[in-house]
Structures are given as C-alpha cells and as structure tokens.
Image (cartoon, rainbow, N blue to C red):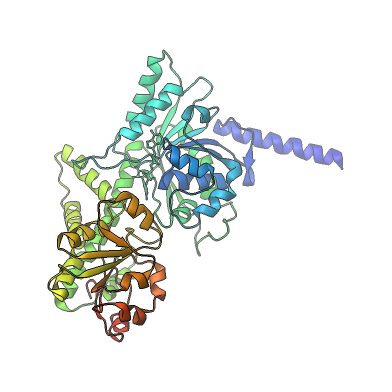
Length: 489
Ligand SMILES: NC(=O)c1ccc[n+]([C@@H]2O[C@H](COP(=O)([O-])OP(=O)(O)OC[C@H]3O[C@@H](n4cnc5c(N)ncnc54)[C@H](O)[C@@H]3O)[C@@H](O)[C@H]2O)c1
C-alpha cells in the first residue's frame, strides 16, 4: 500500500512538472485538474484590478495586487473592499490565502509569471485616452525586471491602438538605461466586465481575447485562464454558473486587433443604447411604447434583447471615455465615424429628457424640491464616473430647485467626490420623499421595486414621478394619484 501511494505520487508529480515545462512556467504548484498555479502581479486595485485579483486568487493562482494608493491598500489588507460590487466583499475574505496587497511593486516581483496592468485610462480634455498611468507602470516594470524574471506583461487597461508596442518600447528603454537586455513578453488582454456584475462576468465571460505576437504569451495566458476556459472550478457560494452557460471562446489575435476589439465592443453597445433612446423619443411623438418596441425587435436573434432599455442613457467609466477615445483616434487618421458621433450626441441629450418632463409638468422649477432615486450610473455599483445624475443635479441647481437624493450604496462616494453640489442626502425613500414636488428615478435599484408608493405619495407636496429607467408601470402609479411619466411611453 505505501509503495502504491509513493509510485502514484511520483507519477503525478512527473506529469505536473512536464505540464508546467510545456508552458514555460516556473512554479511547482497546481490547482484544480492539473492546471498550473501562476504567480501574478496585478497593478491597479480599482474595479477591474481588484475584481480580477480576487477572481484569479479564487481560481488558485498566487496574486499580489499592487496600488499606489496607500488608503486603498490599507483597507484591502484589513479585508475591506474599497468598491461596491456584489459578492466581492465575501470573496475577498475567502481568498486571503492566495491574495496579497501591496503599494510596492518591487516586493511583489520575484519569480512572477504574469504582470497585469489594470490602471485607469481616463479621457484627456481633447477626448484622447490618457495613458500616462499605463506608461508610468511600464517604466516601473522596466526599472525592476531582473534576469530571473521574464514575465508576460499584460495590458488589461483599455488602451489605444499601439499600446502593447508602446509598453514594450518603454520597458526595453528602461532596461537599456540599466545596461540590460532581457527577454520579456507583452500581450493585450482587454477586459469586458460590467460593473455591478463584475465577478459573474469575470468567472463566466462570453469570451477572452488575447492579442500577442508570440506563442509563449498566448500559452501562459491560456494557462492563467484555464479554469475559466474549461469551467473546472466550483462556483463560489452565491455566484453560481449561469443557466445554460458553457465555456467562453478564447480569441487570439495580434495586439492591434485585440485593442480595437475592446473599443469596437463598447462603441457597438453604446450605439445600441442611443439607438433605442432615439426611438424612445419617436415613440413619444407617435404614441408607441418603447418597451414593447424593444421587446418586439429584441426577440430577433440578429438584434438581441440586451442594451435595448430606453432611459437616461449610458454613463459610467467606460462608454463615455472610450467612445471619445475612438473619435479622437479616428480623427488622427482623418477618418470620420458618423454613427458613433451621433450616438454620443443622442446620449448627452438623453440625460436632460427628465428636465424637459419636469419643466412640462411643474412649469417653474425654481423653488420646487426634487428627489432623486439613485445616483450611481447603474444599479449594483457605487461608481459615479460620468453618471447622468451629476448632470441632472447641476441642471436642477442651476434652475433653482432644492435637490434631495437617496442611493442604496453610492451616497458616501457622492459626498466625497462632489462636495460642491448642494444636495440633501437622505437615508431612505421615505425621508427622500418628504415635501418633494417630484421624484425622479435615476438608477433602477431592485430595492425600489418594493417601496410602498402610496405611503410615499402621502409624504410629497405634489405627486409627480418621472421614471428615468422605465422601471414601473404607469397604471400602478396613477392609481395612487401620481402623475407618472416614463421615457418613450
Ligand atoms: N470599470 C469598468 O467597468 C471597466 C471595464 C472594462 C475595462 N475597464 C478599463 O480598465 C482600466 C481600469 O479601470 P478601473 O475602472 O478599474 O479604474 P479605477 O480608477 O477604478 O482603478 C485604477 C487603479 O489604478 C491605480 N493606479 C494608477 N496608477 C498606478 C500606478 N502607477 N501604480 C499602481 N497603481 C496605480 C489607482 O490608484 C486606482 O486604484 C481602465 O482602462 C478602464 O477603461 C474598466
């Protein structure tokens, strides 16, 4: 019996070692189903970096997540998630064994297989993407690469065409300054997660895209994502595998195509949202209901049902900045992108549709109290970047309204990020509604579906409800004495 045990152990160890040699991986650990455990450094602990870190740690890889923001790292080291994302807080604590946080890149660098860049790429004033954080990270990597460590450096941040090459050049230049010439690899691996569903999207993606000019990078990233590509892991509690989900596509291409895939995906989704909002305006004119129109076209498989919800338009950290970046990039080639240009314009105007409705019903906004239900750009996140709520608040204040707001998770972030906006933050829908002349639904949080609107109406000065996300039925509100208006209905 002991002999059988020893022989089995030797055979398994041999198979595993061979498997790892094939991928050029240095560790000796394995995770589920003989998949290799990689040592990974993820730079940036924001929505993408933190989610990716937690999920890859859950899958068994050894992760160090590095952020230059000491407050973020202190909080994460104390087991407290710094962003709101369903399931993240629990998973963060559950994966402690495989996940470390640090402000110091050099400490994390020993023997690392993969370095993932997940820092922000915000818009510059001219619309171009600001790649300075990515470039800074590339410099830091070039300053600490050593002869024992030739990782695959991965651009996960959304970056302009040519950025993989740019990162490669920067790292090479920094090495040369140190009189060194090492082998290293750069790949593009754009991220498609949606805030509010970030963990689900990371563990159960539709596809994983890798752009690289060498097979080593592709092999290593295939190993990194093997548990996802083969769906060999047990789903974390509460984050079950979606019904009928199979396995994601693994798309390999050159870096430029990978970089463009990310922008094309966001541009397409943004155009879909603007398309339905443009039809929402027409529906109001002709007496159609945009929800029925969207349903009617969405069942056509060529069109699909998603991203066809009329409302206040898109917001958040990606669509706005990415569409602007594409426009800027195209202009550098003297290429005009008329469809996208129109989608951006439609989206901007859409934010003020609720203002028009308020003015139509209230006539004079000055002196009125308007309560905003939700601030985040969409439910299940506390992200306020490019949120329609901010434009609407600014406009309401400019028109002389008193503004109150309630959001289940984004209030603290709102107070921190927008201290200049004179908004009365409330602790619940009832407190919000007191003395309001109108309520405007900005974010379709699930908790709003169980509000007692009759009671709410009893607290308001005037029972006016503008449903900026078409979350409710007109009849339900009208039977409680409300004047109700949705978008495109
Ligand atoms: N948020 C999304 O839904 C989403 C989805 C897909 C892709 N993306 C892309 O992913 C990238 C990251 O987005 P995010 O929303 O996670 O950004 P974020 O702003 O939430 O996080 C970025 C983090 O990087 C850190 N950072 C910046 N420079 C650094 C440096 N030199 N060293 C260490 N840390 C540094 C910042 O402190 C911050 O915590 C962007 O390019 C974005 O376009 C975002």
